[in-house]
Image (cartoon, rainbow, N blue to C red; front, side):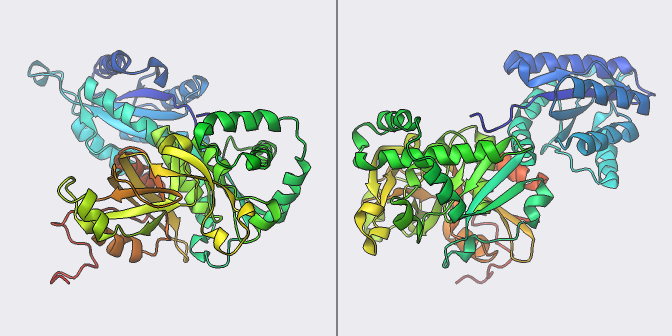
Amino acid sequence: MKNIPTIKVGIVAVSRDCFPESLSVNRRAALVAAYRAKYDAADIYECPVCIVESEVQMMQALDDVKRAGCNALCVYLGNFGPEISETMLAQKWAGETGCPVMFCAAAEENIAVLSSDRGDAYCGMLNASYNLKLRGVKAYIPAYPVGDSEYCAELIHGFLPVARALVGIKNLKIFSFGPRPQNFFACNAPIQQLYNMGVEIEENSELDLFEAYNRHAGDARIPEVVADMERELGAGNKKPEILAKLAQYELTLLDWIESHKGCKQYAAVAGKCWPAFQTQFGFVPCYVNSRLTGRGIPVSCEVDIYGALSEYIGTCVSGDAVTLLDINNTVPAELYRSDIAGKFDYKLTDTFMGFHCGNTCAGKLCQPEMRNQKIMARSLPEEVTNGTLEGDIVPGKITFYRLQSTADNHLYAYAAEGEVLPVQTHSFGSIGVFAIREMDRFYRHVLLEDGFPHHGAVAFGHFGKEIFEVFRCLGAEKIGYNRPASLPYPTENPFGM
């Protein structure tokens, strides 16, 4: 994955002047040793400056972690800690670097320390969090931020995927090629929230893209890309006649990204595939979209800008390919009875099919095949609808999620963990049988109630915890999730249906 940041966390210990500085220094050393024993030592940097009630030391520590190339910060309370200088560090770090900061604190090691070497960091975290709010600093504080060195090492490791997403977003440019198809205004949303998050957006015309594509005719790199497509498709190469055009299009997108990234490091694309794309380009772009997404450059369909952003968040968090699917259709009761009931612990209304025309990368499909887009072929010549990658999505754990600006410029999100069942779909496109507990209530009281569009991003694994924290750090006002049956939604009728 070349399109996501590598995180290096600077660990800065802090100490209240009425506590021994050695308490924080020794606990910092134990934390660092615990991390290096279990995880990659390159993830962290131990700052030698321990801040003791000193704004001068705060500046020394800030300069030190910046020189060390850190792009995330952990303020570690080895004892009660100096609430002024420690939160001032977080404020300056966030203001000068735009990078994330977390806080955690040391637990007391044993009975012996209670007599005279008690650290009281449990207490100090309260003042730290209060002072962070006074300063308007959004810091990542884990669900329970106090523990021994091994536990705090786990907290820092758990911070990495959250930090990857936050750093990536600050350095992301989304390229859109529109306008959006007439009947997909649901994918339209104000771009103000993108700017609020630090995301840059470059909105282009589909005509600009077509001109760039035509300039790539005869590109000397096309045969090499075609050969790579042939290797990837293998026996699934059912439309070999279209590969050269698809290769030309892939090179067009990659060159556009490289020449237009400007001051940003990372990229995502919100593309278009209809109604004029097929007739003018002569194919559909789904397979190319899948290939770029598989390399960590998410490409959403139907000019879904917040869909592309959502995909990018999942790419950063999981370090893996993601996809974007329609929350598409119900599972027929006949299929549920024959292949799910009695085999999997889900109700019929827990299940649905997630689908898109062919944008899921080959590595996430069972026996992928290059086909034509059946829906488009109902009204167009089949030869201009080639280019989709079809197959059932691989079974396993998933997280379905999305970040979205509302029409009146509020930031909403949702995340729900579930799985793709090992059940044949008997259908077309990139498609799978999904199961999310209490999906019927989640569908009604989150997706419908809060006005989310039909597209949802899919990360392959359970990443709800990390994605939820990213949404919180980004300032999402609402974060929906699939509540258990025992916990009603605010809009749910308490008397039932």
